[in-house]
Length: 504
Image (cartoon, rainbow, N blue to C red):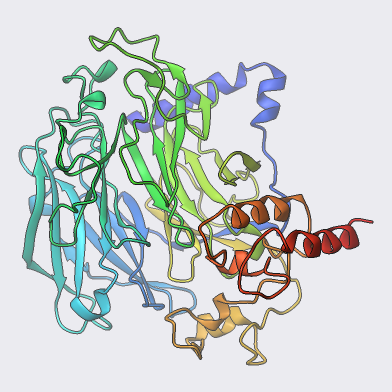
C-alpha cells in the first residue's frame, strides 16, 4: 500500500475511535448560504500539486505536476480542455524521488502579459537543493502555450538537508508586488537538522521575500541587523501552501504539525514582517512538549488563528481565500483540508476571531471522480477555487449548487456565468476585472447574502478601525452610508437603521 494511503487509513481509524462529541465537531456538515458542489475539470494528470492563472488572462489556468511539468487547462471551452503538450517541462532538472520533493510552486509575474515572466520553486536533481527560478514564455504571452525552457535564471538556491519539509510555495504579494517563498525547517523530528525554525541566520523554516529580479527589498525586517536579509517571517515547520487574500493582501500560512497539532497562521496585510510563528518551541498554540530543544524556548510566539489535533487529521493542506463571482456569500472564506483524512473546511477570519467555521466535505463530493490526497487548492482568473487530487491525478472546481435567479451584473441580458463561459464577458471600466465580478455590494450587506446582520457588523468594525481614509475595498464602500467617501463612526447610525429594519 502506498505511504499516502496508509496515512489516510490510520487517520480514519483514529477518527472512528473519537468520543461522539469530538466526532460531532468535525462531522460532515454545510456552511449554510449557497449550497456548493464540485465538478471535475481535469484528469489523467501526474501528481497535480497546484493550480494558478495569469493576471488578466481569463481563458487559461495552469496546473503544476510534481515530476516537473506545467500543463494548461483551456477554460474558454465548455467543458474545459486539458492541452496535450506541456507549457513547461523541466523533469530533467527536478528531483521528485520523495513525497515532498519535485516541482512545488508556480507564480506568474503581475505584468506577465507584458513581460512573459513566471517563477517556479523546485528541488533540483540530483542533490535535492531548493531552486527558485525565473523563466520566460516563447512568443506573445497572451496567446503562447509554450515556455522557453532555456530562459531559466536562478534567483535563489539553498541546500536541503532532508527530502522532507521543503515548503515550496511562492506567490506575489497583491499589495507590494514582491515575491514570497515558503521554506520548511529542513526535515527530521523536532527540527533536528540544526534548530532551523528559530534560527534567523538560515533560510530554512521561513517565509522569504525578494524582488522579481531576486533583489532584497530594503524594507525586509532583518536588513541592516542580525539575520538573513531574505527572511520575512520565521518559526515554521513545513508551510505547505500559503495564500494571499487577493482583496485585502492578508497572508494565510498552513503549517504542518509533527505529532499533535496542525495550524493556520495569519499575517495581516499591514504587517512589516518579522513574525515568529513558534516552531520548534511551539506546535500550534501549545509548547512543543514532545521536543527537547537545545534552545531556550519561550512560548510567546504569534499564535495561530486555527488549529486541530491529530485525532482529527495529520497533515494540513493550505488553501485559498474565495473572492469569486459565482458565490457572493462565500466572500472572504478560506478553504483548507487535511491530506490524510480528505476533510475539507472553510472559515472566515475577521481580524480577531473566526466568525464562520464549517465542514464542507460532503457537499463538495463530486458526481464524477473522488477528491482524496488533497495536495493543494488554487485560484482561477475569476477568483474561483480549484482542488488538486495528488494520487488520483484530478483537479476539481468549487461551484454553486443552485438554480437560483439569473445573475446579470453587467446588464447584457444573459447569465454572467454564460458570458464567462462563452468568452463574451465585458470590462467597460477597463480595470482588468470582468464586470461580472464587480456586482455592486448592497448598502450595509458586506457579504452580499441578502441580510444585514452581525457578520456585516464585524466587517463594519474592521472598516472603521482600518487605515485612514476608510474606503479601502468594495466591502468598506458598502458601509459609506452617508456617502461622504469615508467610513467612520457617523455611518453607525445608518447601519443601525438597516440592521433593525432587517431584524425587527
